[in-house]
Length: 284
Length: 203
Image (cartoon, rainbow over all chains, first blue to last red; front, top):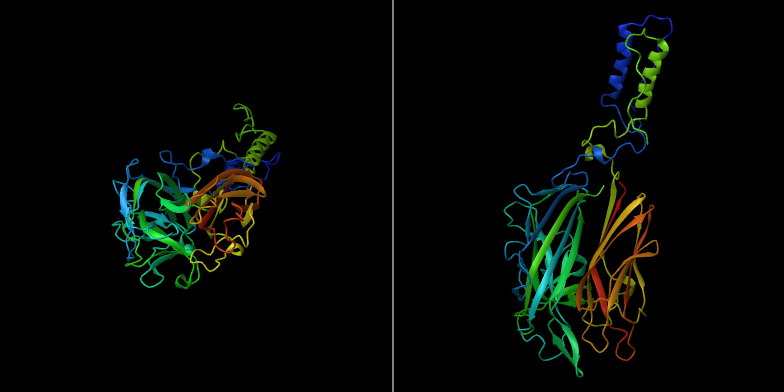
């Protein structure tokens, strides 16, 4: 606390300019960079004193930066075809002019203890059973996966990788198979390839009508080092089925069958509008 | 609340300086500086993060990797997920996860939960559905409707007033067993990739 020692003027003593200057000099000294919470009354500081950023709200006190993009598409979808296992897996989702969120030349710094929050929404407009997937027997319904990737290398945006806690679905399961562990799907969205119903007494498969799906991802940087995020994007891949077996290391995983007789390649899903939003904020 | 304006009267311009008056004015000024300043004294638009201690405005906690409780994970020898079997679950709300939040002050608590799920549907004679809910100190603050797709993604969000520390719980409820069609030992449900975000805000 900036405390001022107050020696009173003495009755009867001569009052000199030096005495007066000294007393007000004491105040100046104490109040120059010395004021703190003990000088301010309780609830004495208000919103008015906080540094604000009037055009965007990103003053850095809590919110550092935001980003938002959409691909400018309505309900008309772009078809994506399921493929056999490959490395890297999946296809980037940017089509139209969006669905890749760039943070410019310098990127956006995610400081230690800062948090990245990402929300995305997608409109799945159509499915097509094309590969004979459901002929010849009853099959547990497979799924498509969409996952979040970031580029923390450069603004060239040529080095995307799965965000922390997220698999890129390139782990090996059985012979020729690929998988992602469920324990590594912090930023995965799943899309059913269809649904089962009973036609008379026969289990039958059918495509859904439109579906709107949303997912979020939260990450706190506790690496001890700042991370610069240059871009975010979504990647789609399919088809996968749930599995828990020796091939998955006795943990839950989504597995893509090997190429060949058991291949699930050739199925389609149409992805229409995509919106992707991100917040960079402090956590403390 | 009175403002921080200095209001002690000044000595008359034409009078001799009186010791009592001089001390009174000076003492009043010093007294104001000792714990009497407020927003009317401070400049506007200057406090930034460098002036604030940690947790002066908020406290955020993120818990990732939330999945179906391990006590309910079973497989029965199938090739599907290690998931919920009717061997271990009879129905109704199940307390899947619990999180004790500390360091909170009186204010608002923002809660978000997002996850993926799977429901076995190939045995479609007995359709299934699942619901989730969030509870704060035992009080339901957010809940979903029924989810019944083979695969899906859920999102729960709530902003609630809190008095301080407390316990956040996640529960789910899955369709009860159909004794005609369901096999007790095979998995019917699993959820994974759950992320729980809490943000206490008090300024």
